[in-house]
Image 1 (cartoon, rainbow, N blue to C red):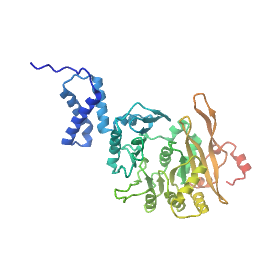
Image 2 (image 1 turned 30 degrees about the vertical axis):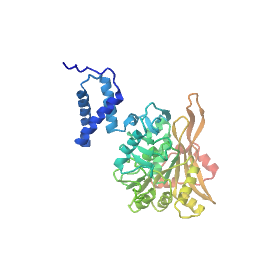
Image 3 (image 1 turned 120 degrees about the horizontal axis):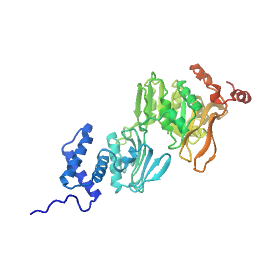
Image 4 (image 1 turned 180 degrees about the vertical axis):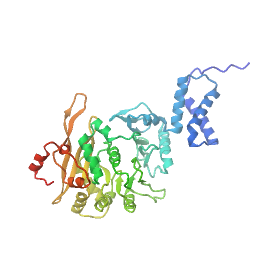
Length: 439
């Protein structure tokens, strides 16, 4: 007489169980490919069937865990999927298979999650970039990409990545942040918010400057939302992140070279091409090279209301970086000419910072006033003044107007808008008289 099948195994190796069921399901899906629309339901059916075929009475908690992990592996991004599903996590960083970090509420912590080996990390990288037609190999060991939800991904593999394949994911906010939420978070004040909104509506050229992870793209998204719906908007990005709600939007994204080193399309190519597309507004996700010259020329030749971001730690640093990037265009322009172009093209630099406590703030809003000799003149309209740090490590400070009304204010009035003097500070009249600035 045959021995009876036990109702449950004496000991369960979960990893072996998952590997077995994954193998069974993968064979089934390869022999009978299903459409994407019903893939989730079919995978669950196949998991349940695989459990049934094993003829063991597995605990429900174990079955649920294995089912969840397999769904993440087949339909998501494996061990990283729970972090991508967590709305409080803003960034996921993989420093090799055994070191996975996340940023949550502005703080970076190491997780307990690990990949079994380098190949498992490479598998996730391939899964991200394959649908986008991008490649990564020893000859091209870095890649920028995006997830289906718009999250930005950078991957680096050996020989460049010494300790194993690395992945950095900047998550895209599924629920688009609104200006009111930034006001509640203390990132910006109501007066500053009203001011920047009217600047966008008045077609001023604006640069959002800040360090890595300071919230530049989020703020660019919000500002872009103020562009009137009857204007034609061209967006240009390395990896498409902007999610504009307007209908008349053309979104463009760079393209890397093929295996022969041909066919690349750069930000600079796209900026130049956008000028032939009858744009009302040009929105560049980030300038980081020679396209800065094309952007300045566009701003100076009738394409008012353009928006972009760049990496810099202060408005003055932003101008210096811009000068360097313009010189990268290879036009051999004198530095004074570059500065004159920048001073003529840019109206406003909005500086965004991530403070030591993890909070993000607009630390200054600065007007570009023109040139004095060889120097670009800048005036702070709003400024964050830090007064200390409390016992919990929270930065204490205040966002305040400087009391100076910008020289471009007549353009705001010409566009049909008015701002109360209180927006710029209660004593604006006295301060203006004392400064001798023209209105």
